[in-house]
Image (cartoon, rainbow, N blue to C red):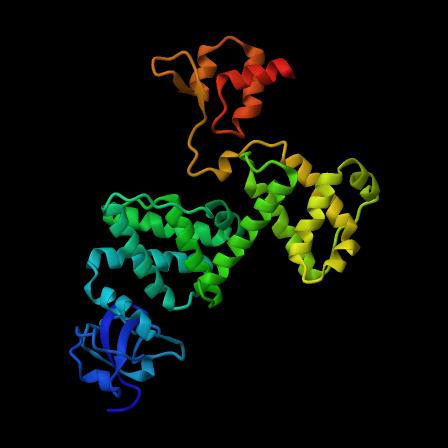
Length: 355
């Protein structure tokens, strides 16, 4: 027996296996007795085809193991127990989803099989108990990590197709965090911190501009802040000959823009060198505070509901269009309905009459 041999505990997929070292004292334990293993001998082994034809208890030749592997932290042994006891159909659905995500995002850290299995299994338990899963950072995560969010939708879609359980959009966002962490090889708290940072900037912008109680298109501002942050890192600020005029005519927005830029810098003195960037952001802030929320930032917005004279008192935009003869109101309603999921019939009329 060599130091490069392992015993399989569970096959994750054709290229990943949970195993423990045969040279470690924990190897004397039964393959299903993982509760007594108080060390890091258990690990996820990665190698092309390493899981193909492998069964729990089989010895794995170390020559098949690539240099990458993820040791299981002693504090995470509950994950190992989960991997050995989780219903096979649930486990297969999760691993299939991760493989789809990897086809979109590229190679992911093998630890994602552990973290996502643990996370999703717990979420399924909560759903079975009838609990509601919320995510206050849904918009931020979807905007900051669009590729990971798209991949997370594939994971959720696979779970829905395979075991007929629909995970909510909040879960899509949480899964996106795990995928980003696995993509970059960082802890989940890293992308979570980025999402929180953006949420903090949006919150401060609303506070500075006196619109904290308004529901705005936060994704619009976050997208712009991300572009600014990229320019900050590249030290390529925008400039405009209108800086003085913007600063004069939009003092509140300009001051707020400077504050937001200061948070992106470690040295506030640099902000004064970015007057053009502050001015351009001020214009965006002015436009942003005049906006109404876009369907793209609302959870699975499927149709705009408008109060109409129907049996139920509500109807979709198309239904109301067919039932009204007020063509001017219809025109203005078209202008509003494509950006709001809460617009009412009276809103369309009031905007028409105030136009």
